[in-house]
Length: 259
Ligand code: NAD
Image (tube, rainbow, N blue to C red; front, side, top):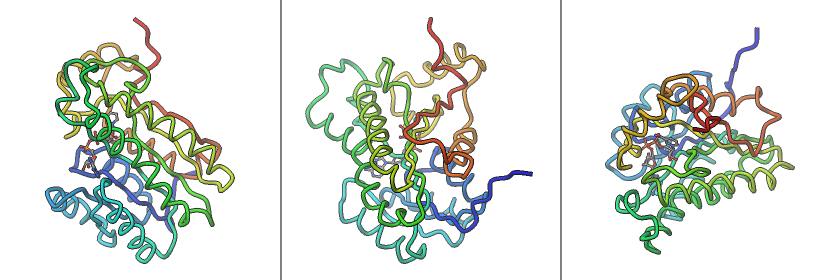
């Protein structure tokens, strides 16, 4: 019988805010498969949540990382180098942010600052984290994954600058997949359907959008965070060694639909 066993592997999970976070769904799936985990959290506000959730994995380092801070990113990688035995097999990028005023109204009114904030936090951070992950992955290969949304390709009301950031993120995934293929480091995207998380609630009209999604998706429902977790487990595992630079839709099939 084939099963996914990640014992002996290590993973860095970014972007856990609470138990609804897609990062937690993936981290928990990897953890239940025996993977040694490390978590990052953004700011003291979320430290308590992550510590509480991570009690399930008592050996997991819990590290502060605001991706706006180069020092904090460097700190995370020097800590995991020491605490995970000098190697990293898997990295999950599950980070996005745009200012509230840039997630509603006219896209053409996006300010330079708003554009830069969304792009840096939601897309550039993948590049910056990957640069530091590579030295820990290159001996044995690795799997990196990022979370995206169909607004990278299509227009969704109020996604505005986040659509631009997801387009940049998906391009970065392909570029990194090309560059890191010779090191046997795979880089993929999971494009998830709408899930009611802390970030999602920041998008005006999100619940209406989730309802429309459910009505139109071939499976006739919204997805569960655990389904993103399972897809993450697949991308992290030896079951997906032939897959890189790919966008894997976990959206109940919504992306195939026309009108
Ligand atoms: P979430 O709010 O649980 O997670 C977002 C995370 O981003 C939080 O942990 C937050 O702390 C982190 N973050 C924001 N700014 C940061 C910064 N400066 N430094 C470090 N971390 C920062 O919401 P989520 O829905 O689980 O989002 C995770 C990913 O999934 C995001 O990339 C999001 O765009 C993507 N996604 C979400 C949905 C959805 O409907 N929820 C759908 C598709 C893709």
